[in-house]
Image 1 (cartoon, rainbow, N blue to C red):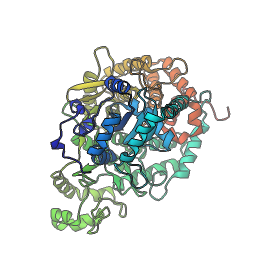
Image 2 (cartoon, one colour):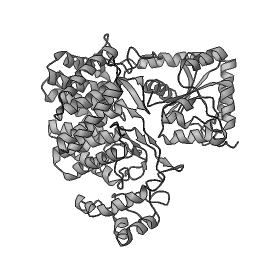
Image 3 (tube, rainbow, N blue to C red):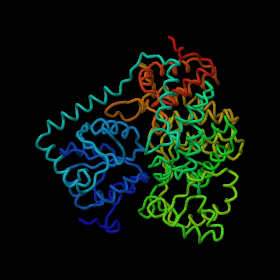
Image 4 (cartoon, one colour):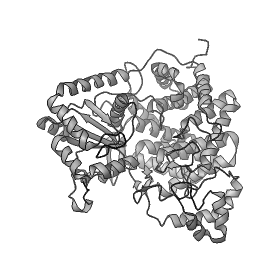
Length: 606
């Protein structure tokens, strides 16, 4: 069945939201609700299961499912008749996303976005999936076949659905428990290093095979390992990875900044969306590499990242936007790729040399077009500078294209990371511009996303600050304020960090076992109250908090904070020891405490 034009439809209730993601679905024929009491009361009153869909504004497959499924009148008819449909922006409600993503991974063995959950009105799920087309294809069930089956299950075999839901609820509660009682030892550093060495790609850098993610906190840990233990192999792995990522198409050679990940081993073809957090963490990795080696390339890439963020991702008030989409005009990567003719017509007689250098050919290297890259012909930094005029000409031409969607909401957590990166940039590169930008962003967050009672909030957009901040918001912002203090900024940032840290502990700390919960005691109580430990695309809030505690102990001589860090290492030590490469920021924090002589980590022979 064909989908009707957005212009032919009346908006649904999502039209009143601020989230760019929710607004993308405001003209769907689906009768969407936000996550609210009204939706759950309707589900109970009408005795219907809930169809929960979670995604974010710059998610490519969210766009695909939106076009194919949620704009489909037949799919909408089924959803509206037999389900209560709820849309959630995972970046506004990471607490909801975290819990139900765990469930999806447990049920299906994988996860991703868009996340699809079918659950009872009591919020216990009994079905999970990611992207679903309207009709079955390529082994994926279609919503037109799936929704009637799930509705029948709910109506005629509800006991089975409820039993599944209760079993899953029990599993996630059990899985949320840590494995305490194992104190970290110095051996964990070496175990992680050996494991990284086994998965390191010596040809193209990075770890494992495609798809490849930058994982900058892993690179920063290896730099810290090199600095502490003087093992040259650690530095070599980092340098190979940083130079290969810069040479690849994952790096935007025309407008700067890094895409989210590479779909191939060589770093050539990215998933073109750009995230604020990736660029903040990568800037830190390149800065640390420059600090340790003095190599100009690393300094230049960090400068390029900041140029991109300050040019394209900064609001007039000083806050940083969240992301830029991979898609434009309905095609992934269209904004970023080039034909040979386009480059030649733009650059004239210099075009051939530029195309040769950046692998731009008539046949292309991506769907008939070319992604500029230096993989086959790595060039020294000085050679790149000789083509700066040509880069600017191409950038001007590219800016005339239809640009990808920009998710312009301001998140406290990701802003904290960029504040930290810019403050580091000032400390290491000595650019006043970076310090000024970091201070302006910090002042904006503290004045706009902090209530009169001091409670931090998570999201700002179009004049609205909303959602009680999560653990990551506190941890990352405190990190940024500590870095501002380290950069020599006004001492009020240190005092604010201490004040926020006190609130953080009051609202999030587990007094019984240690560690910090994902959301505060004053937040909405969901199926469980989890703790984030894993250092995935982002370092875990608990790991960042542990390092913050150690820094604040050093700066403020408060041994109680060092004791909190010790409690975290003790509480999560078993998990970290089992698989240390999944906890690289924890290892970074543990190395720091060794470095400053706090001696919380035990020697290897104990």
